[in-house]
Image (spheres, rainbow, N blue to C red):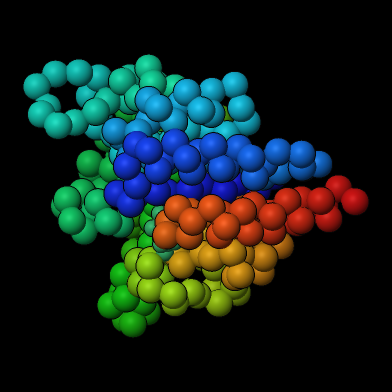
Length: 258
Ligand code: 13P
């Protein structure tokens, strides 16, 4: 299976989100085989988008959550509240939140634990900055993030967790790593996962790639068996781009069953 996660970030309001959700459903219609698609609108659009995708194959995701069920946490939203809105997935630890909101690995860890406790599916983002890449410490960075966030976390099924490898320098820049680099990082990520989640089969935990994915550069990623999908930002709010990405994923899946 391949998973396409559309992270709409703070780019669309309610009306645009609903239109994009409807467009996504149309894009998926009539296919012999489709990737799993998760759309992550801003919080304010979740309720309306849920009405569009309820009873469809498209999953609804949130871009963030807080780690307590309820209480005096002004401006925050819990996993319990999100599930009430029909949200099944949540992106946690995105580098933009780490950078602009000061999210630490400890906070990310609390969020992952809370999401799992609320039976949500977690898309955990990891990745190095440009200076870490220049210093050649990308593996160490990713390792630290995974160990700090996941060590001791209780995971009941490999389906509940996806890792999105998103090098920070590749986000929104048009720069992408070589496919071979992503493959090597995925192997490394899986080795860390088997260390920190010894009860899980790390090969079954999906590892996605994210960063400057567009319709025309998607296929080389998706045709690799160990790249389980993509986390898409800017291109995912352009329906023609999203369609191209879903087309490429369907093509790969078709070829696998042919
Ligand atoms: P872009 O696809 O715009 O580079 O963003 C990637 C991302 O941050 C998805 O979460």
